[in-house]
Each structure stands twice: as structure tokens, then as C-alpha cells.
Image (cartoon, rainbow, N blue to C red):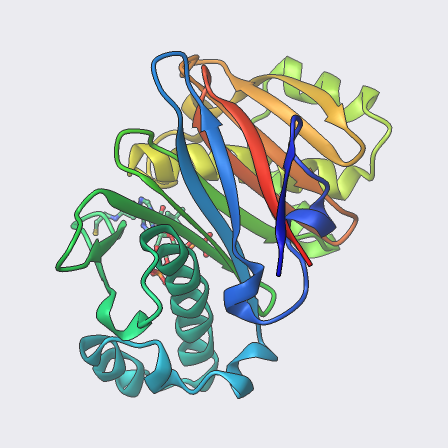
Length: 261
Ligand SMILES: CC(C)(COP(=O)(O)OP(=O)(O)OC[C@H]1O[C@@H](n2cnc3c(N)ncnc32)[C@H](O)[C@@H]1OP(=O)(O)O)[C@@H](O)C(=O)NCCC(=O)NCCS
């Protein structure tokens, strides 16, 4: 028995990414648009999940071949985590419990593609960092993407040296009373999530993806707008050790339909 709790504002990190089995963690996000509403599904996978989920229970035969070809165990683990999270999100979206029927491939820019015999409406975005993966399944009509980064000294230093920040971004880092390292990493993930929506990743001049405003929505939750892509916005969940950013069309209200019980 469970019931659905609809939250008017995006939920806190721990609520959006609950514990439990991988399949039970998937959360439905209601995307309320002026013309019509739709749904996306979000979930995550952690290293410890791999022991309880044999690869043959979720990999498509073509993916099993890919997994076997990795020379380094760490790369194989990252691949498996990403596939496990993606299958859980796409499986929830399509109400398909046999995840081996879902095949994930890549497009010419490395973007993930879902092959599923019954529907071609679903897209997926995924991200791995620090032994975890997050995935978001969403309808093709509503382009979205997700990015996650672990926050640590080295990551923050790399971001600081690689990104040319806009004055608005610098001002936010100074004025937002948050951990400076997490703030740098947040600005990186906000840009990277937009790069994924646009399919260019981080191969364009990174200033094109810059943020012109970051405002607080709730404790640990921030909303950014983009200087050059005003049709998108980004929601970021920030903890001292981890940031998850989700880019979506601006005219979209985001509600979580949380499963309880
Ligand atoms: C997208 C990108 C920023 C991701 O960087 P990363 O450090 O691997 O970070 P993450 O773990 O957050 O994301 C990885 C996932 O992003 C997705 N991804 C890769 N390229 C993508 C793109 N162009 N658009 C959208 N998503 C993409 C993939 O699903 C990938 O996971 P997978 O390989 O296990 O399926 C980076 O790969 C990039 O800039 N790619 C563009 C490359 C490109 O344009 N190549 C030209 C063709 S050769």
C-alpha cells in the first residue's frame, strides 16, 4: 500500500533521492506546462546497489557485450551504475519492469538514446560522480538534462581555474551564504546540464552556457537562469558534498509526486 504526496515546490534532496531498492526509489515529477502537463522520472544508483542487482537483470544483451569489453573495473562500474539508474528511471516512465528490454545506445555526440520496441517518446539523461549515478527519464517534447558532481577541494579548484565567471556568478558566490566550494561546483553543473540539453556537452565556449541569476527556492535548493538561453532554467540541489542540477524549459512548474508507505 502506498499513497502519493504532491508537493507544490520541488522537494529536499533527501526526499527526492530516498533510500530503498533501486526500483522503489524512482520519483515521478509532474511537469506543469501552460499548454499541457507531462511527467518525468528521476532516480539514483549507488555502488552498493550493484551487489544486489546482477547485471543480467537489467542490461540489454548489447549492453552486456559493452560491459564485458571494459578493460578497467572502475570504468565498468561507472557504466553499470549509469545503466542501472537509467533503466530504473526509464522503466518507471514506461511502466516496463523487464529492464533488459530497454536498450541504451549513444547518438553521434555521445548523447544517450533509448531503444524500446513499444514507444519512442522517452529520452534519458544521466550523470555519474563519486561512485553514484543519477538518471532522469523525460518526454521528448520537453527537453531536460541532469548533472551531478561530488564537491571536494580538487573539483572546486578545477572549476575555478576553468570557468570564466560572469560578474553575476561572482556576485552570487560572494553573497550566497554557502560553502564556496559547493557554489563553484553548482555553477559548473548548471552549465553542464545545459550543455547536455543542447547536445554540445562542454565542447562549446563555456561562457555561452553561463548563468545570469541564481536565486534561493528553499533550503539547499537554487534556481538559475541562463544569460544566453532564456528558454531554460535550472534547479540545483546543493549539499556540502554533492550537487545535482536539472535543466528544464523555463515555463515549466515542477512538482514531485512522492510515493509513501
Ligand atoms: C556531456 C559531457 C559534458 C558529460 O561529461 P562527463 O564528465 O562524462 O559527465 P557525466 O557523468 O555527468 O555524464 C555522462 C553522461 O552524459 C551523457 N552524454 C554524453 N555526451 C552527451 C551529449 N553530447 N549530450 C547529452 N548527454 C551526453 C552520456 O549518457 C554519459 O553517460 P554514458 O556515457 O554512461 O551514457 C561530455 O561528455 C561532453 O562534453 N560531451 C560532448 C562530446 C562531443 O560533443 N563529442 C563529439 C562527438 S565525438
